[in-house]
Amino acid sequence: MVLKIFFPKCCNTADSGLLVGRWIPGQDSAVVLAVIHYPFIPGQVKKYLTQMRSQTKVDLTVLGSWSMPKDGQEGMDSFLKDLSTIFPHSRWLQLSRESGKRAFTCRVVQENGKPAAKKDGDDNDDDDDDKDKIIFVHYDQRKVMLSQLHPVQEQKGSEEESTELRTMFQTVAQSEPLFFHDMYDEGPLKLTHWQSEGREASIIVELVKQASVPVCIVLTWLLSVWHWLCSFRIFHVWPVQFISSKLSTCVQTGYRTDHFQTVFSTRKATTHMEFMRKANIFVSFLVDIALGLLLISWLYRENRISQLANTLVPAADHVAKELQELLEWLMGAPAGLKMNRALDQVLGRFFLYHIHLWISYIRLMSPFIEMILWYVGLTACLGLTFALSVLSDIVALLTFHIYCFYVYGARLYYLKIYGLSSLWRLFRGKKWNVLRQRVDSCSYDLDQLFIGTLLFTILLFLLPTTALYYLVFTLLRLVVVMFQGLIHLSVDFINSFPLFAMGLRLCRPYRVAEGVKFQVLSEEPGTPLHLRMEINPLKFSSVLQCYRTPTYSCYPKDSWVALCKKLFIGELVYPWRQKSTKTD
Image 1 (cartoon, helix red, strand yellow):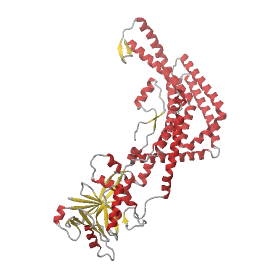
Image 2 (image 1 turned 90 degrees about the vertical axis):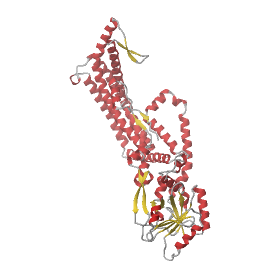
Image 3 (image 1 turned 30 degrees about the vertical axis):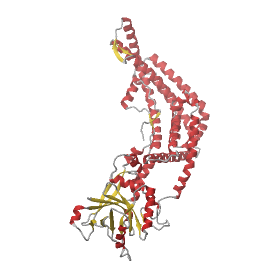
Image 4 (image 1 turned 60 degrees about the vertical axis):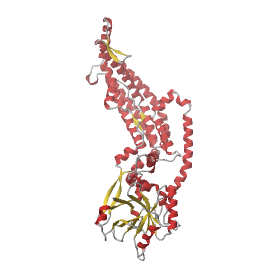
């Protein structure tokens, strides 16, 4: 039989007294939680333990005695041994340690007063070694308390049998009221535990906790008012709803609203994952606001808004001029290719007309660009993510003519590909069955084959001209999409990065634990085996995977093969941000 005693490191140098803890049911193990110092009155100890049992819902009891004699306490061992007759027990642990030695002397006494096991360095019984073996597991009470490796909620919601280690972690977590008693409390009892020298707390944190309740109530009310305003019918009309779903600023606003509802909810987090999710969102929001304020301080200093406005209009004119030169190059003989001159001229003049309209629009808006940028820059007060979302929308507006060129070229190219595929089936005596969604055989007469041959020839010879325009404008559109994709990835990184969890992993790794490991401290003949239990933290990649906040991802979301297929047949590809399907 092996008796395991989980002993806190903070009690290694405690004064002589009583061991307070719990015997793990169904296991031959004991968890030591604290040491009550001598002098004490047994009646007061019993009253205190009864009070702690009602608060912690843990069967706390006196496990035995702890002896670390000092000068003038020669009779302490005999006094502590006699206490076994006062406190009810099935087994009484008698632990003692001499100054300067790491190993303990342990003696287990049964309820009838007979020794069950004896482990010391002076008297070693081989028969007892064969029957009983005592193992001390030294644990850091603070780390076990705060690790949340096996939270109490897990015990309530799980029906499976609790393991020894799980019960030990949950016992320490449930015994939190026991650790509130420190050396500054005026009372007849003095204890040694991880907070015995003073509670680990901060006045600022306590004040924030007290102020957070009314603040959360006010913000929850404001969010309800915001949802009431958004529920107006005018915002659900098709044009307004369609435009708002395509603007990155509106998407980011909805995203922040959902997160504010999560963070400022008056309901307390019930699980560790829910607490980490709220903390990650809140810290990401604070970092976002800080970065936004830094951007504002940079923009509105040294007249940078005017410099940006004076740079933006010439840049737009330069882009329009480059597009005009590109169209003139396509209207000639690009790369020595022989194009259909009639179609080439029609398409070139059509796109040139759109460029002239765009230049006129830019010239009309140029007097107001600086004022627009000045007010748009203020959105950085809401966070850097809002400023980046507005930048993405501005890029979409400034490159709207490129998007129109892409749509025109894609639609024309798609119609020709679709027509050529239908006429190719006509040559083979096939047709597409719309009802059954398959290709069936079909017999065509001579007139149908003649007309099909003419149309196929016309479309085939016009295809290179259309394909060249489609290829050029698709490449231009992909450049814009890649730039917007980088902006969206930056926004998603700020929104979803678990900054709080990463900070805990760097500063307090035991707060994000995945398991434990044991190391041998002392293995001397005739003495109990002493092990040290350490908390194994999660790897950084696991922290990022476990605590990452669900966010919005950038389209196109398809695989590269599917994306290339869409581009080949001329289907439109949109880079709009959509909500990801990642769960908590």
